[in-house]
Length: 330
Image (cartoon, rainbow, N blue to C red):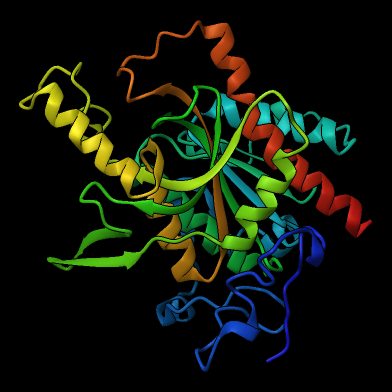
């Protein structure tokens, strides 16, 4: 089949020729996109609903004209805190020369749970901390994009993480998500049975983010695996939690094992984010800044003023990608 990639960067700018969702790579598999690029979700139950309520976003497809509201969305950018995603929305507005102040327009304010701002073709959405919170928002956002008939939407998670053997303040663009059991999968009990899904991210999109990061000299950027832990303390091998039943030698052996598997940072969402977007046929990537080198210690002792500057780095990388796309389309 012919290539139907809606490229962000020009085809010659990176070595990976196609996105993973390209029709030319299907090899007989059914496409998860319609011919116009809109999503074709595999859940037949959705078509049987009289109306679909995205409860945690305070949206539905009966009382809201989702195609009019979000049909032009190209980038869905997610991050942990409401403050960070409002800051990113303001940054994108300035970057794209859009005058509207996003601080007063939280599209999901009625939910009292999360924040969502729309700036031109960009949705900036908070997802809380950890896999259960993030996957709830992620799945409802995928449905919003489905009902809105958005064309080839790109999902990117930006945030903070702990590094492994790289300088604090570095940006890691994730190539895959690793579970706490050291598998490139996301597992979930479904109807009483543990199910597993592969957790890889789009190679071309990762390369495009790295290419965008090359514009900045303030930080180093790495493409590597990211561990998505289910807990901040014992789940990440920390020694400074209220409970700990292993030694420092045990911890270091575990972190060294992670590093040997190609992992350069640890956060709490990567493998689930990769698996769900992949199953839904959405190309996606993750860009996180590291706040500490876990091989050197557990606690984050860098001054807050420095941490705030570091947290801008993933925003700059994603913002550069978005600006490049918008300028090319114009």
